[in-house]
Length: 51
Image (cartoon, rainbow, N blue to C red; front, side, top):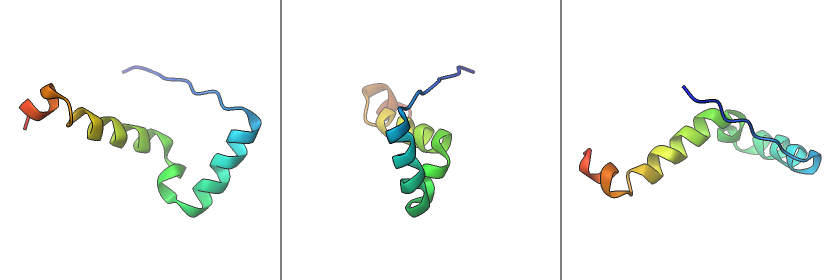
């Protein structure tokens, strides 16, 4: 398993907290990122071949 560290400036961190209040998907950043990666992977030739 790889670990990815994200550093956000204070302003963007505050924005993220506000967005998380409205959109629950942004409360779980790990799950959101994994979902986006899987969606984009399915668009690649290797991802389409795996279907």
